[in-house]
Image 1 (cartoon, rainbow, N blue to C red):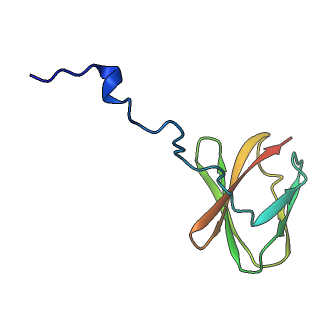
Image 2 (cartoon, one colour; image 1 turned 180 degrees about the vertical axis):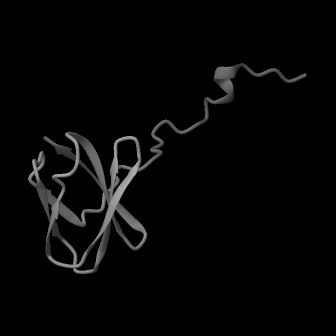
Length: 103
C-alpha cells in the first residue's frame, strides 16, 4: 500500500503561481458634482451615447430613473431626505455605481 504524507503530495507544485485579476477597471461614464449636495446635482457625461441613470436609496429601493442625453444634465433632488443614495448609470451592458450624499 502506497502512503503519502500531505506535504509530499504537493511538493512538486509551482511556487510562483499568480491567480486572479491584477486590476479591475471600473467604467466611468459620468462625473457628478457637487457631492455632497443640497438641492441638485450636475451630471457630466464622459461618453457620447445616451445613458440611463437609476436612483435608489441605500436599501436598494427604487426612487426614480433619468435618461441622460446631454453632455451636462442637471437633476433636481431637493425632494429627497438627507442621506446616502446610489446612482446606477447604465450604458449597454456596463454599469457605473456612484454613491451620493444629500445634506
